[in-house]
Length: 162
Image 1 (cartoon, one colour):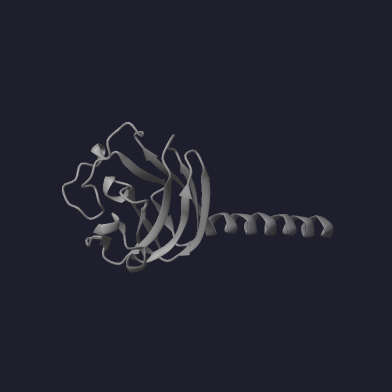
Image 2 (cartoon, rainbow, N blue to C red):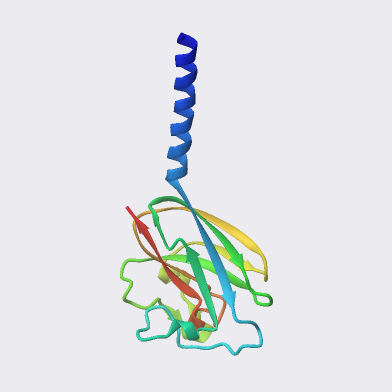
């Protein structure tokens, strides 16, 4: 009987440890997509612009789930494009109503000024990559910063809850 109690305690401890570890980390599936090389790149879809119909964007990013709890988060990123290189960069947004700092001459976001928190660099079409970071509660934005892609709609908001 004593051995049964000890074995039960070991099994319960393992179950609780596994459950705690599963809750401590989150996985977010990220898709980098576009409507194809034959579709003209639309513009005017940059983050922070008001009154924009994102359904007309020729490129985009989806993140599922779009909200997770603070802590260790793994982003599994897939470039779903058939012919275009994309990337995912994560930035913290203290004020989500202000636009990201933009370098017009380079047609991209100024990553240093915007607060780059990590990235999965240029992914070939069909390729995948991962990024694991420890995030605090707040608003974040995921973008593709390949020149021209951000303004075509390649961004999505992401929330980390306490």
